[in-house]
Image (cartoon, rainbow, N blue to C red; front, side, top):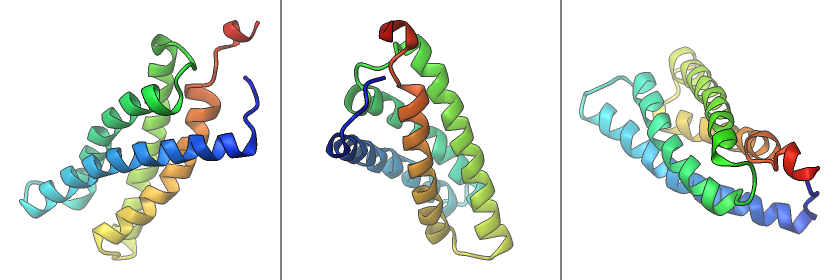
Amino acid sequence: MPVLSFPAIHRQFARYAVVGLAATAMHYAVLAGLVESGGAAPLPATLAGYLAGGLVSYTLNRRLTFAGGRPHREAGWRFALVAAGGFAWTGLLMAALVGQLGTPYLPAQAVTTLIVLFWGFLANRLWSFAGSPAKAA
């Protein structure tokens, strides 16, 4: 995997963050829609929102942030595993913040989103979309 210069990694993170905003908008729309309509409690609603946002995230990150990395057949399942980790972190953090500490669900989700954003960027950059070893040879 080629090493990116410091400014290049900033640009890549900026693209990741913009994609994250689109995915987060989808996540929050599902979360708020389910909670405010009475369709679900905050925890299952945020997990449903996470799944919807994940679809947006993979599609846009593959095209805009990590283009030229692993082929879809490799990146797809790797992204899914990273997303599953983010899903678990989201559930654990929201359960702790909302369930244990009584934090209102939207501020709790904002904190959770920031933590999962940094974790997901590193995991996806270094593993999911990183150039395959076969390409490096």
